[in-house]
Image (cartoon, rainbow over the protein chains, first blue to last red):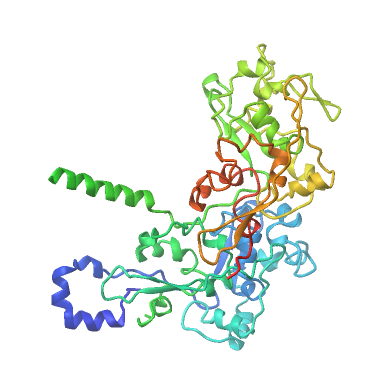
Amino acid sequence: MPYKNGSAIISGIVLGCLIGIFVPMASYGHWTLPPLAPPAEYGNILINRTSERNGVKPVTFSHWIHRQEATCRVCHFELEFNMKVNTTEITEKMNKAGLYCGAASCHDGKAAFGHEKPHCEKCHNGNISYGKEKFAEVAARLPRSNYGNKIDWAKARNKRLIIPLHFLTVKPSKDVKFTSKLKLDAEWPNIPPAVFPHKSHIQWLDCNNCHPDIFNIKKKTTKHFEMERMLKGEFCGVCHLNVAFPLQDCGSCHPGMQSE
Amino acid sequence: MKKSIVVFCLLLVFAGTVWAQTGLKKKRPLPHDYGKVVINNYSERAGLAPVVFDHWIHRSKFTCRLCHVDLAFAMKAGATGIKAEDNMKGFYCGTCHNGKMVLDTKVVFEACSKTAPEDKKRCERCHSIGKNVKKEYDFYTYTEKFPKERFGNGINWEKAEEDGIIKLTDYLEGVSIKRTGMVVQKDFSLETKVHGMQNVIFSHRKHTVWNGCEVCHPEIFVGVKKGNTKYSMPEIFEGKFCGVCHTNVAFPLTDCQRCHTKTVQQ
């Protein structure tokens, strides 16, 4: 899927020659955005670290099911799930001991189904589109968006159509005040700057989800996260390629730009 | 002139790569791996596997101070430069691991010895990387009854001691010096530089229980006077100052609000 944007096309025709002199053509290169999964499969992952080796089908994990129940913070901060598939050393033993999926108030057999028969195949089914029918029901009652799951999760949360848990044991403080919107200049002269609101991210995340691993906390050192690196799954791309609204949705970060 | 411009440009590029970051999330260690140190100063050269040192088992018996002050262990893996000879003479590991010391009715196994045991099994209790050694204590069985918390080893060590589940030795006859207690300073707050971030409450009382004075002063924090040592959060993340302990053994920096607790009046 080639990358283009409305304003680039218009200004490209009018100012093409002028800008062409100063800006190398390479900077207009068309990126290839990764193909998007169908809405019901966006954010679904197959976990197969040891499953098939142990004679069971890989685990299907749906972000869209879980993010209705808990924010990103709960699993990726408190429960220490890593950010890349198959890197978290989840085992049945660990889960049963109350770590990872098996944490208290999650799949502990009380709040959600536990780790015994007949529940095995609810996860170990190897089917990336597992729960498709349920997805249609969920999507029908939540506000729509144009990309990813085609669900506006932020709006759904703000309107309290979903009330995800925000902590299990490590309560976040309400006093952290990062309300300012950061403005980030784009690499190309004709692309409007991106804005970053801390506020809407804190609603789902803990500071540590992003800092200091993905974004360090040194001031003025954020100049290295070009779109190209995000497309490789770095920086914003850690989440915004596969779970949070995808990079196709240009306008959500670069207001003033049309989305693809 | 031209040369200096080239040098300047090269420096800029270099600075750029130094400042560049990976943009990826690091993998979290498993509870039993947190605080694991691999030591390989001389091991492989001597035909042995590198040593694996687990903090969790040792900290369930001894204070940090005992090893890092009285026994002179450095704070960085490999920086102590422990030799088999040193252990045999009763320094470092050999202070306790001498085949004589009795701990919880068990004799502490001897570290290195001149006559290598024939089956090498004893060597492999420490020289264990890649050896698939079954350790005497299994982390999860051993810590089953310990109070739990998130991050690091997943154990609330402070509470474990308060509850009497662990009793830590802080004094070794013939090694430690008898000290008289000092009056501990009251908890104080450290101001953050970032607007909107809560201040840090630092408790000397909590830290001195396991560290005494010497683990931190004067090397890590030079001053006994507040404000003498200037440091920043990026430096702490790099493993300096608080990060000497709180990136790898003490509870990790994951949970910002464990230290940043005091709301600034605005």
